Amino acid sequence: MLKKSLVLVTALILTPVFSHAQFDPFKGVKELADAIEKKQEKDAANAAARDAERAAPGQSAAPVSLGHGRTIRYAGYSKSFLPLKSKLLSGNFEDVDKHYTKKEGKARKKAKGNDAKYFRKVGFLGFVEHGSLELAQGDLAGSIEAYTGAEQVLNLRNDESKAKEKSKAFMGKFCGMVIGKDEFVPYYGVAFERILMLNGKSIAYLLSGDRLAYNVTRRSIDWQNTEKAAFDAEQRKIQEDLAKKRGKNPFSGMVEKLVWAAYADYETKAQAVPSAFVNPFGFYMAGMIQEFESADDPSLMDNARISYGKALELNPESKVIREAYEAMQKGEKAGDRRLVQVVAFDGFTPEKKVLEFQIPVSSDMIIPVKLPVYEPVDSVVSGIAVTGNGEPLADLDEVASVEAISLRYQSDQRSKQTLDVLIRVAASVGKRTAAKDNSIAMGVVTMHDALSTPDMRSWMSLPATISAARFYAPPGVDAIEIHSRDETGAVLSTQSVAIAESGPTFIFVRSMDAQMLAHANQSLWFN
Figure 1 (spheres, rainbow, N blue to C red):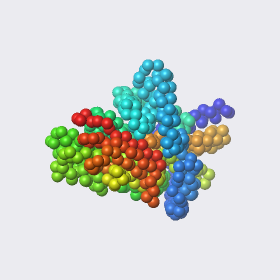
Figure 2 (figure 1 turned 120 degrees about the horizontal axis):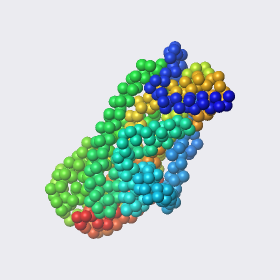
Figure 3 (figure 1 turned 180 degrees about the vertical axis):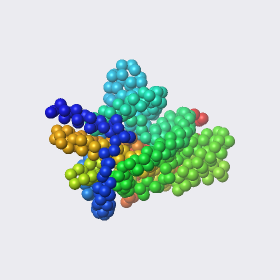
Figure 4 (figure 1 turned 120 degrees about the vertical axis):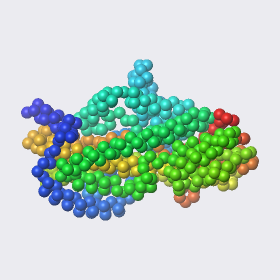
């Protein structure tokens, strides 16, 4: 009996892996589906009213109740990152650095001289999280090395044959289905994360005074165009597959409404950008570098105008981008004045959590559904300003909202999530129906569904916003002060940074609530 139960359980759990396209356990239940859909619409309306009254969730690992059986909680990678984030917010950067250094050391030892194995063991997230920390600390060589490691992970994937890549993806999904965890498949970052990886690397090069900053910046722009084309093609395929499911699955309408309602709270911020590929920062960086170089080669000023103009097209509300564009349009030359460009990464990108709710497919069968959801992270920083000798010089203005980009990415993934939920609900109903007369099998299936978790991986240390200031340092000002303030105007943190005696200065700032780190380039390649 036990052996038979185990065989049945294994077959049931693996059903979604082998039969996504053919599996249809809902045949003959259209009337039941219609009745449940009407009930769900009424319940969803009641839940929405309750949801509107709830407070914004904090950063506690405890579940946040949304009413009507729905909760949002940390799980997987996002939960494991919380202790590291707590250390970052308390200014304990050394411990976080040790965490990643230790991880890389273990990977190097296990790889036994095999570089490809080493890169895969550290993984995309290990490298980019460490790279962004080292950039914040001013360890430029370490940051460039880490970001290069992340690129190597992506290059290894690109070098693999399609058959080998599909085989790895299948095995990852196979293992994930068996234990109910979706984090077995290698993580290569989502499109906007890969672009921001190159943005971070270009900043590290610019602070180092290396013109490779421009090469990496141009590559980030090219990647953004390539990623968008690939994303658009993927979305077309998903829409085709979803259309087929709608015709066969009587629960498709209800599931689609529930998935779209699950992300409704974030739509206003998501719609602040027209797509997840609206990242003006690459163009702004290109314009900045070209403007710096135009001091020695005035012909580059028009190139700077074009780059700033491209950034302005993507974010027409940005004052700092508009001012830079108009200055280049007028042919404004620095002359003996000292141009200063400040770029600040502030806050934390939305965190990936698990959104759970239930679908009652019959009076005695309730299917748990779990979706990944990005939740914005509150920041106590209301603004960042620059002063010199106690006099105001500039207020930083937003260039790009990583928060809006990530929420837009989530919004654009709703059809994919709907398709995934339809497949999983169909599989779950089939498993439970087949196991209904076997208590052992039913117990394991129920436990498997309860413990399963979607992929919670994301680049957690990314900022929420990228802002900038562009100004000329007044005569006699040899250092500037950068202040972060809360909404009452109280100063949270201040950093003093020396500026160049002649020529331009680039300053990078990392702000995290009461913590702030700031670094300036010592020289540039043309100085």
